[in-house]
Amino acid sequence: MVKQLPLQQSQLDQLIERMEAVQPDPPSFGTPVGCSRATGRKHPVYLGIVKWFVTMHTTSVRKGRQFLMGETHAGPAWYLNSTTDDLTVGSPLIDLDVLDTHKLFTDEGYRYKAVFCDRGKPRAIIQQLRYAIEAGRFGTGGEVDVLHGPFEEVLPPYLDALHGKGLCGVLFVDANGSMSRAMVEMFQTYAYQLRYVDICIWHQANVRRRFNGLHPSATQPGGAWYGAFQKYDYRPLRELLPDLGKRRWLIRKPFNVGNGTAWTMLVGSNWDKLPEWRAGEMYRLDSPMGQAILTECDG
Ligand SMILES: C[S@@+](CC[C@H](N)C(=O)[O-])C[C@H]1O[C@@H](n2cnc3c(N)ncnc32)[C@H](O)[C@@H]1O
Image (cartoon, rainbow, N blue to C red; front, top):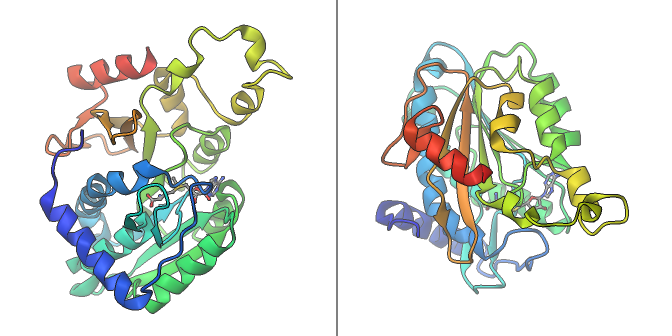
């Protein structure tokens, strides 16, 4: 289970109140968009992680790097979770709230860049994301872009336009818990430009167990899992992670958000001294604890 995180929870409650004042009847997008029961429960953990990344990059920003925070799978800004009936603020508003209240961007005069991609099915996700950011007065400390389309199509031109800016920061990947081949390819292609931009991936810890015992024909053309195997890279993390262009990795102790799915988080960075974050239960992949978690995931 997720540990009780009262501070994070009260900050989320404040965000919910702020959005209730702006849009008293939040839309309900249902579950087809992939924001399942689990999404809201991951948010207290997520909020702590976003803060941790900003702190980690503070020195780089002061030395002149442009801070970038991005999401490949942004999701809606604010909605009624139709499975739980909970009012839920989505991760983009959490990101912007953390950034807009950080001293780098309130007192020290730096400006961040934030970019949110969503394929927008339904399109209302995008419209509401843009509306909530504007009406809720988010993004006061930087420039925010909301890109409509699959991240693998819309993010590369955005990154190309930032070429030469000397970026630092973090890109979050929150798909459905599997890593797509398109994601692996994008991080390979942009490895140099993103060398000081960390990547942070939500991952279903036991995703590979789904395939244990499958008949080989299931993954062949015509098989029930053929499409999934075309789209996702299900190699063991031990093989897959080295292809993402980062030298150091942290892995979070898997936790269960109550729907039977164990989630972990992977943080990739080129910072050789990337610290463990024990309070956040993030361990270096090359530590005994990290190796034990990896073995559990790859089993
Ligand atoms: C799990 S939800 C995101 C939840 C959100 N990060 C949060 O924590 O509040 C996944 C989102 O990814 C979007 N999506 C799925 N495939 C995508 C792709 N290839 N590119 C961009 N967005 C995608 C879906 O529309 C959905 O809104």
